[in-house]
Amino acid sequence: MKKFLNAVILAIGSALAAVAATGSVTTPVPAKVTLGAYVIALYDLNPNNNTFAADLWLWAQHDKALDFKPLKSLEPENARTFATSLDVTEDHPAERYHATKVRGVFSHNWNVVNFPFDRHELRIRLSEGQTEADQLVYAADSANTGIDPVVRVEGWRIEKVALETSVRTFTTTFGEPEAQGGSTYAQGILSIFIVRDALSLFWKLHAAVYIAFLVSIVSFFMDPSKDGLFNGRVSLTIGMIFAVVINTQRVAATLGQTTAFTLAEKIHVVTLLELLCALVCALYSRHLHTSNRGAIADRVDRRMAAALALAYILVNAALIFFAARAA
Image (cartoon, rainbow, N blue to C red; front, side, top):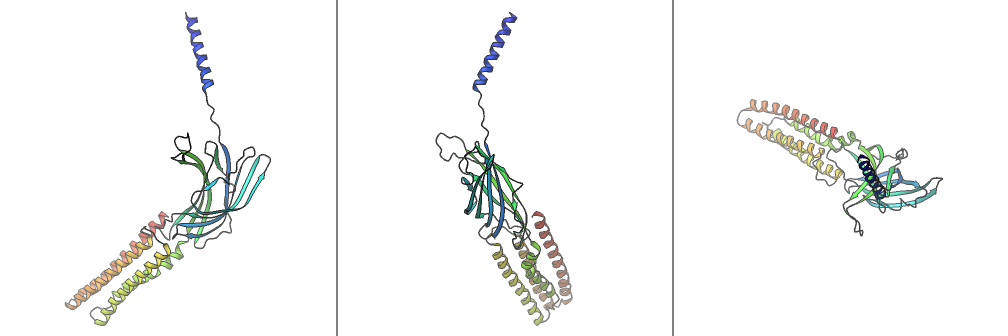
């Protein structure tokens, strides 16, 4: 009886193994295309249009036995204009090499909240446009990817260039018959990391603001009991308010249209509030003098000048510190 049971178990096991062997499916390994890029020019960094322009050499290499044209089927996802020239295809003992020169304008969301202490990752997104990721994937030629050392962008410092490869997933089959679910395609992202040269630009844009603040502090030492000095004090403060408003428009022109509440705008608003307080203090001091309380008016002026100066400096220091830290 035991021999019979062992024979039955062995037979069932053999049958299951045979079924598993005949029913197994071998998953095909996708072909690999090695992608690389070398930036030779970076220019027209334009926050107003949310764009930047770049020239670069782009190359790809793959197994010589595969009939691929990866640079012809490549899709620049965030390009507004994209032109290629000087196409090259070379056969080597084991691989086929493709190269082309690219000139393009690319979209970029310029986050200027911390302007001018801002840094950006300029991305050029390149995706395979025909063959899905189950048949073709990208690998990065990191060793040769980079940027020409002679490339300079005024007002900016280029930190590094990197290329990462991944798979882009779409939640559509693009209407392909008999296809189900989504679609996946190889993707390469060329990133150019840049940081703004902040200090010189910061002082150029804010010198007028800080001068207005200093003038408003000096105005506290103008005696409001005398008509001429009081009128001069009020006129001086109002003039500084107009100067800050005009400088705000200058900053807005530099930044372009943005809904973000930027560091520069915060500093201008704080300055306007300080100037408004200085104007109110001038009027209150005049009221005290006309009420024969000149000694109290003098104390109020001195204390308010010190308090406003201290508060303004601390608030500015905090705004600049957190902006520089977040960048």
